Structure formats: structure tokens, C-alpha cells
Length: 257
Length: 326
Image 1 (tube, chains in turn blue, red):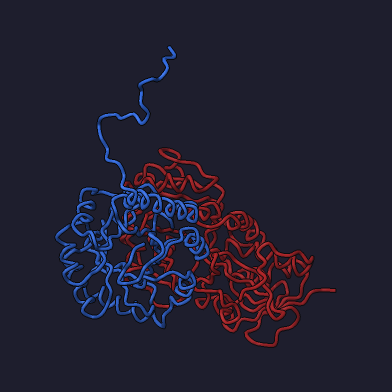
Image 2: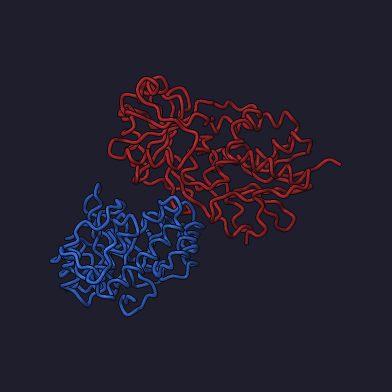
């Protein structure tokens, strides 16, 4: 099971907590997903006097590790401030770092991300950077102190799945010992299974579950897919090949026609 | 033996319960320290859509079914209910949202071309098709509440700003009851009212968008209500620039003539909600609580009022009864 900054998590599925029809449905989805980590946004909910407290209490009751995020932050300064707010609110060093660089595609600002990751790591945070699958960027993030990488599958909320299989596989190959999480862009369970088959340690998703007609059922679907993909990776799958190879010998078979 | 009740809270929930009980013969007093309905209550900032079918996209089944009682009930109270249905549209790139919305809801027809033109001529040239929810209705929330209060006064309901409650106490105070109902939380909403004389709409229009969904409700005389954000925060003040910008942007995308509109009001409040976002009737220390109407105040208050009446007058356990609200 994945180990993030020394903490072993008993699930390869991480779920976001936004956009569910209700907190009760959110709780159902978590139960059936058996997710080990919940991400939670603080940027817009904080307000004065911790006005988001009631919702955060419901999230805390889920009994999973909390990973606050800096969703919606478009600059280094904003992300750093939000991370500090999150540390106060949730009493955790963990922060999922998002620095958005493009408001339409919500693509990460990779330059700002590396800078914010450096500042926060020096400040004692344990940073989970939401990044692209760019090898050089990921190397840089590791150099500034990140011990987890969370490359996107596709832009946030698109449900397009894994857009760059080569890039994701290459990251796994280059960083065999770094916990890798596919974060964002997943739409259906088969895509999560695929990420696990590439040897990823976990997947993080939100919209695919929250916006499904039946979020709890979709959550369970993802749980099963993640488990299937992880089993497959551990089992060392066969290589694809062009030549058909019958699993039963043809010799000696009775001719019926 | 006639029933005597005191209702705490004189906004959408309280007045609906007062109307239902007084029409069924109860002697009703409403106590609200704020007096008449106004900006202190979140129902003042509501859209006033009676749109059970649209709400079915995300809301649970009881909201859709119970919400279908709303339009007729409000009309029976003397409210001006516009039975014009509502429209759902999506911009080019988000067209698939419309298909999904159609799949997740009932009682609609796809309109395009001349049919669309006949319904909303100002939108028909901007969108090639729309979902028409023909059974839906809308009302003006503020006029409706003020008129209902007058009507109830005429019917003998007593309105006070303070006093000792008599008989069965029914608490309809929304978020004010949070101390007694710890599971209750606030869900912040921001809205905008503007005047756009160049735009004519006859019915509420929803613009689907994966990030910035919007609804616009016509209030007559070129006035429109734009709503509403939905944030997991109990904050009842501080409309943010981002939220207002998103609402205005979406309105501008719906029709560029909204760019020339006059900003009349920016409103903000929090809706009272339980964890399942469904309303509840509950009893605690002999007080009956009607709460958690969330974003469905006008849509669900009639059904909730009926259930309170059935419970107090006939002993029927309400469908939305909740044994323990913590």
C-alpha cells in the first residue's frame, strides 16, 4: 500500500470532497470507495470565523486522512497563504499544492508550482504537488523536497483519462521509488485501472464520482478497478504481441467437420 | 378542541405553516423579532423557481415529488404564480451537458427553431436548442411573502415581534435554530439583481456549465435575478468579487445585452441544510422544528406545511419526520 511521507495508507484510492449532491451522499461514496485519503478545499469556504466549519466537521467524521488543497489558487503567494490557512484548520503538514496557470484548462503553472513547493517544504510542509507528467518538472519538484508526485491524467474535471501514457510510464521508470499518484482527469474506472497497471501507487479523483448519477456506486466501481489494476501490475502482466499463441495445443484435437 | 400554535420565524417556512394551519382552523400566532419578511431571511434572496423537474438533476426523489405540490399551493394562497415552464440551455462547447441534464431529469421536451423562437425570441438566435420543462412555474419571492403575510393578518393570524409562545410551538427559524439542531449547517449563496430593459424573458432560464452554472429568473419590468453560488460555508455576509464576477459572466454569456444591465442588488446569505440536504420535521423538548429546506424554500415549504398540519390535526407521522436531529 502507498506510503506518503512515512504514513502508510490502506487504500490506493483518494477522493475529493467537492460537488456532491449532499454531504450524506459524499459520506456514502467514501464508505463504498474505501478511500484512504480525502482532499478538501479551503480557499473559498474559509470566510470569516471559520464559516466552513460545519462542512469540515462532516469531512472529519469520514475517518480518513485529510489532505487539504490549494484549489483555485492562481499564484505562488495565494497558494502559500492558503496552505498556511489549511495547516491551521486541519492540523496537518500535508498539503496538496495546486497553482493554476491557465483559467480555461486549469493547467498547472509549473514554474509557480516548483517555487511554491520549495517555499512550503522549507516551511515544514509535506507537499503533494499537482503537476503535469513532465519529467524535468518532476525532477525539479523532487529536488526542492517533494516526496510524492501527482501528475495529471488529463485536465481537471474532463474525464478524458490518461492523455499521455508514454509520459506517465516514463515517470514511473525514472522514479521507481517515489510514490506516484495520477491526479485529475479520470472519468471511468477502467482509466483508474490503467493507471494502476502502469505501476502508479494511487489515483485521486473527484468529479467522476461526485457528478455520477449514483456517486456511491461509481465510488465502489473505482475501488474495484484500482484493486484490479494494482493486482495486475503486481502479477507482472504478459506483453502484448502480434502473433497469436493458442493457450491449448491444437495437435491431437478431433476434427469435427 | 381547536389547535393553538405559535410559530417562531415569519419567512417562507413559518408563513407557509401559518397559512396551512390557519386555513385548517388552528389559532395561529407568528413571532418574529425581525417583523415582516426582509433581508434578514434567506428566503428574501431566493430565486422563486418552482422547478421540481430541474432540481431532479441533483436533488433526491422527495424534492421532485413533494415539489410538484408547490405551484398549486402557492396559487391557492393568492400568490401570482407564472405557469410558463422553464428553459435549460448550454453554450456550444458544453452542449453535452444538455444531453446529460435531459437524461437525469423528466417532463421535458427539446425545442429548437420556431418552437424555441415562440417561447423566448431573445434566446432562440443564440442557442440552437433548449430543454423546455413545461410543467414548471415561478413566483416573485418577496412579493409573495409580503402578500401572504397581509393575507394571513386579514385571516386573523396574529403577528408579534416578541412575546411568550402559546400552545404548540413550531420553530421555523432556519439557521437561527442551529444551537438546537446541531446537524444543521449553512450553505452560502450569492445572487445578483439587475435591470436589463433590453432583454425579455418569460420564464426562468438555466445555463448549464461545468464550473459556473447559472439561473436567471425574470421578475418583470426588465428586472432579473441571477443565482446562485453554493459554497460549503455558513457565512451569511461578504459576497465575493469572484462569485459576482462568475454570475455576471455567465449572464453575459447567456445574452450580451446583460452587459448593459444596471446592477440593483448583490445579495448573500446561507441556506439551512441537514447533511442529506433534505428538509426535516422533528420534535425536541415539545417544540416542533421545521427546518433544512436548503435551496428549496418555496418549492418544499408547501409540502412541509401540509405535513405539519396532518401531524398536528390528524396525528399522521410526516414523511420528512426525523427522530433525532442530534
